[in-house]
Image 1 (spheres, one colour):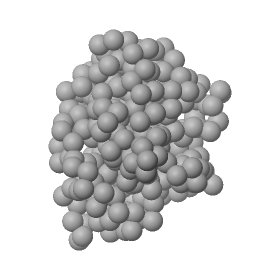
Image 2 (cartoon, rainbow, N blue to C red):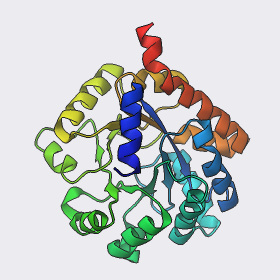
Image 3 (tube, one colour):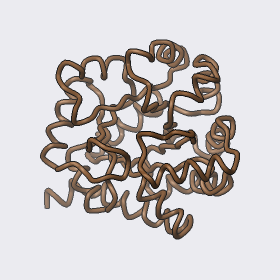
Image 4 (tube, rainbow, N blue to C red):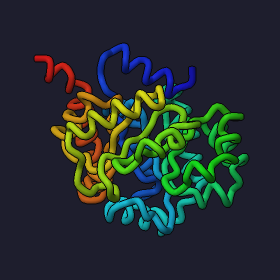
Length: 268
């Protein structure tokens, strides 16, 4: 099994949800990102989501947009992001790392080269929020050749007619966007999330991670009682921008602890 399959199998055996923190590469600088990546597993990260900046992050709210702008102002390139993963792998061979961003940088690089470079760096998959299933055949083929996961998004508006196309070819896990909006805006209701997670698991046969709008340990724990993993991005990125790396790591610890103990708390 690859790293993602191994990690989710271990989480299922432990009977708990996983925690997936998001950080933007190059925000506030590459050195800080490298230090965060090194410390995130110790702070409770089961999988790491590493953003790469793009000039038009249309699926993101103000917090992630600002992080992308800061990263681009620092001159962060896709090669720099892959370099962060390569350096991370020197000390951590087990924690899955997923890249998240937009299709333009991988397209400009060429999907085959992008896949080969990701595999060489030690990345495990990618989420490209603006690449629909109808247009990702070339990328999927390249990813299959390099045993990488293309992770697709499902939303509250993904209906029964659309769902089979969304989950076809998805690997690793399905990312459920719990709100019909941008990152960091609002959150879905628990009952609706439980129903969506069950529906997506049945359709895909894969774990389901839930993100967008998760900001507090209480909300993260609530979602962790039904989801296979919880993704938190904007809250961590905002804490990093306002209070620095140690504060961001402290929030990560509190979020991961809430997720890890959520099902035990409910049973008690």
